[in-house]
Structure formats: C-alpha cells, structure tokens
Length: 530
Image (cartoon, rainbow, N blue to C red):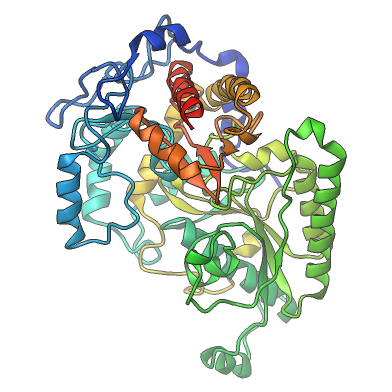
C-alpha cells in the first residue's frame, strides 16, 4: 500500500536539525520570583494577564529564542495566587452554577478570556501554570493567536452558522479540508479517515467498522447481499455474535460499546449494562525499568500469553482488539515497544483488527506525533482513533475495505464538524512551523531528568517514575496523591491525577524549560511538606 497523503508531515516534524533553539530560564531566576503572599499560597510574579477586551496576542515566533523569551510574548512570567483556591468569587459562581449544572466533578471555574499560553486563570485573579491542559486536550496554549485567526476566518464562521449534516450535505471544500488538515497528519500507513465528534464515538464507530468488516468477510465479500433472516435478526437484536478485546485498566470512552471496553474505574461503569467482551491484563511494570528487566519481560510475556488465549477461546469471537499506547485514565501504565510489536503480531495471527486508541497520547505529547510511532511496527495498525489535542475526532484506517459496503451503515447527522477540522488544520500547521514535536521531546527529557533527581531525594513522594523518552507524558505515584494535587494549586500549578495514586503531567506542546523550572520548584516544595 502506498504511503498516505501527507505522511511527509511526520518526517518533517521529526527533523531535529531544523528545530528552533528554545528559551530556558534558570531555576535560580525562578527562585528569586517564587514568593508566598498568604499563609495558604505561594505565587510567582504578578504579571497582568490579557483582559477580555484586549486584541489577540501577536503571532508566536518560530525564530530561535534567547534569554527568557517565551513562545507567548504576552504570557505571564509565572503563576499568581491571590486567594485560597477556590476563592470567594469562584465560590459564588459555583453556587450559582449548581442550580443549573452538576458541579460535583468541578476542578476549577475558569476565566478563559484571561487565560493565556500555558497559564489558566480563575475569576479571583489566580493564574496557574497549567500542566493538565483540559485533560490533555489543549495543544498550543490558551488563546493561541494562530487558532484565534483561524476561528475568525470566513470559513470558520460559515462552518459554525451553517453546520452541515456531513453524510448528506458536505460543504464544497470538505475534501480539501480533510486533505490539508486531518489527513495531512495521518499516521504512517493509514490513508483514510472517518470523522466523529469525540473520543468515545471515535472508538464506538471504529468498533462498528470492525464488526461490519468481519461479517463481510464471513459472508463472502462486500458485494454479497444480506439475507432476509439476517435483516430480521438484526431488528430483533439477535445480530452478529462478535466482541472487542480490551485491557484491564484501559479507558476508551463512555458509550455502550466503548464503555464495555473501558476497565479503568467502577464509577464509570456501575449500573450500566455491558457486553460480555474479553479483557486481558495490561502489564504492570516495575520501576526503575533498568533494575527490573527480567521481571518486566516475564510480566509482558504473561500478558501476551493471556491475549493469545483469549483471542483463541473467548466464547464471543473478537473482531478486534483495542489498546492505548499509554493507559492514561487507568493510571498512566506503560509497556515496552517490544510488547506492542508482539501484540500487533498476535492480532495478525488471530486475524483480528488492531485498533490503537491515541485519543490522549496523540498529536505530539510523547515526542512523536503519534505515540505508536515509538513502537516501529512492521505492519501499521488497522485503525487509530484520535481526539483531544486534535480538537477534532475520528479514526484513521488503513484499508478502504473497512468502509461499510452500503451507505447509512456508518452514519449520523453530524459525522464530525468542519469547524473542528479547520482548527486541527491550523494546529498541524503550527506544530510543523514551530517543530513542536521535537521541542516536546527535548523539554520532556529535561523535565524527566530533573524529576529523577527529585525522586532520588524524595523516593516516597515520587514513586514509579515513568515516561522516559516519551516527551512530557510523564507520571509518578504518590501515596497522598489528592493532597499533593491540592497543594500544587496553592503553589500556582494545576496538575491532574489518574488511576488511584498517579500524578500525571500533561503540559501543552508550547511548554518550555522555564515552565518546567516553575513546576519543579513546586514539586520540591510539596515533597518537603508532605
């Protein structure tokens, strides 16, 4: 199969020699500005953030930076914490919101007009360094000028006010918009795309494609017509007896099919009917990796043996397996490239499709545009789902035969959103222009090395540090995780958790070394206090 249109993008994004030299700021400089202004909080600087009536910030420079120059010229020099979090204005807004909206999962009320770059603001004037990034979904920082420009274009306005039912009434430029954006970023070897609304339905529709592909093969080909019996059984909910294999502690969404493959937390699934589909054990590696080589090889082999057994014996035959390159919601669980290569081989051996869920890992965060590129697969995945940082959603697929044999079998009113496709196109252009994938790889190496130093001094606070050579997709375990995250907010840093004890770092692609220094100082303060 020829390489996909736009596959050259990935090559361009991975050229280290064209990377702009990015600014760094010494830890000593940050310490001079890291001061406490209340008994509850600490702050860095009091730089004013752009107000809601200000014009968009100037374009981000792709030229080499010097001194303390940042990607965002108008970005604060550091966090500002003026009140306890949540503060009085925020508490009032939460009470008001509670009357019309369930606020029980609320992290913080946000003032998006005053958030900029790597910093998120709240109504009380607190400005936090954000290394959670809307659950890993903001790629280029808040109020990015390139995205601001794209969002005010005539094409965007038309897409918003004339939102099309894409399956029936696609806009005249839809093919070009796909080629210049979503397909330009396609993983190597995957040249087709089905657009969706979010990660959950990206996976849900990928499962449907796998089932239809499997049944078409069993029926004798896409041209073979359905029988009257098959059509009646479908109407009686007695259709194909097929399943999707997933992994324990994985997360793939909250719809009925995707939720049946989600195994991260009971709260996601309790009271919801689920399909009787197989789940295999995902390797639970021991750290540091270089001190547990033989043990981890045995752990991964046991998982592979279980996968092979399930694919061979499960009473509802699997049509596909789905796996995350890094299990994110389930606790930031990693496995080796060799494990995933063998997993791909098992899918080929057992003739099931191999779906890679890149909803959270995709679009540059791991130091590759797609995390599965770290695996160096001989045979590409059959499908790769995406969302979050793409600001669009869907799944890429390798073989045109994965298109259903008839119209309306894979269909809904929207089938994606041209407005989001426009954003993804601009995101891809900015990532390429600023070489942000290689930038993220470099900053991630710097950050990981510094956290390793912290872990050597505070081993109880930075357990099972993981994410080496995976960009800024870094995590560690802390026995007092929730308290850790609360303290981070008081120090002006917004961090997220995953699983039961993991602290996960999800900076944006414009996160630089001087941001890392601010984060590191906060991490050390927390480690000393806990």
